[in-house]
Length: 143
Image (cartoon, rainbow, N blue to C red; front, top):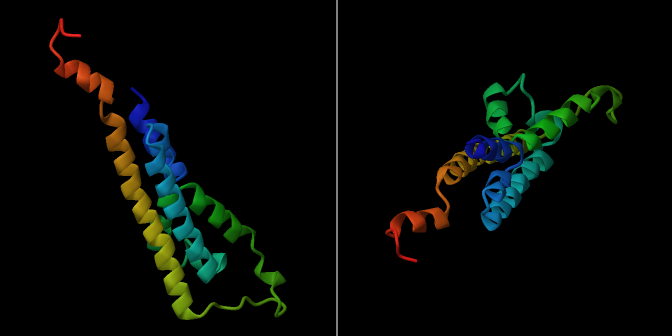
């Protein structure tokens, strides 16, 4: 009864975990590695201060939130970063505009890709298992 909602929640929390929960481990690990690597590559390209910013880039931040725990960790790093401690004595060094755009697109695409993974995990959680499908097709009395 709670299999599909749990699979969807786990797929949002950690990309690929919903597939692992429903028994598709290989697919889950591929999703986990691909989406997590894409998200954190974007953060590495643009830096956490300029990439994950809900005030400057609200729609992109909403797309990034689809990666669940990754976006939560990146936002926590964004909030913890103290611009007053920067090397130039107080002002932050802005990233090059192209690297910032690439970084935002990487993280946003990772979030939207995980949205598709969440929907796939929900659909796969609702499918009956292979054994129950075989039992339904087999007429009674046949073993």
